[in-house]
Image 1 (cartoon, rainbow, N blue to C red):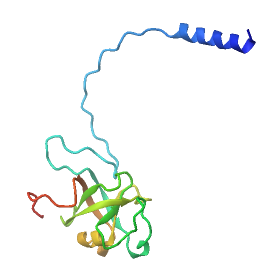
Image 2 (spheres, one colour; image 1 turned 135 degrees about the horizontal axis):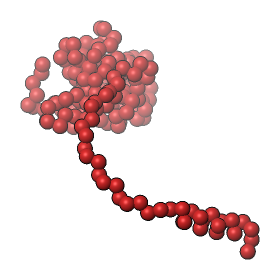
Image 3 (cartoon, helix red, strand yellow; image 1 turned 45 degrees about the vertical axis):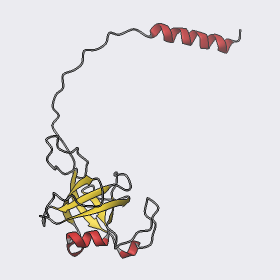
Image 4 (cartoon, rainbow, N blue to C red; image 1 turned 180 degrees about the horizontal axis):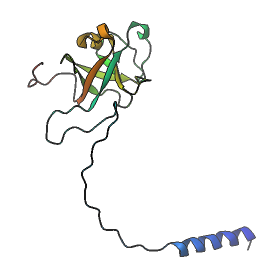
Length: 160
């Protein structure tokens, strides 16, 4: 038998002998967690059925300087379309973006990645979406994001 084979057999034997059987641990009781969240991080929807925002932060916009360029999902950027960039949400996700200050909202589809830089910025809106929220005038707005099923607004929701 070759020397390296003996070393392999020895190590395998030692490893098997070193493993010990441990009794199953008792399950730990569920302790409610206190939400400690940084700005711009996703959080789960409320359990009680209320329409809690999925994310809170700042919205900015990007416009004609990127028109015609390919977005991260491969389609061409159109500033007149209701689209947006988000760091984590899957492409094609529909999001209701509501301005905390004005109460105006717009539904956008995620087509790109961003915004980059400031962690408080959670979404970059197309020019059309920014116009709908009056973000083009001020440049940045405090917003709440809610992930929704599709492009049409539910009939039971009234505008604020």
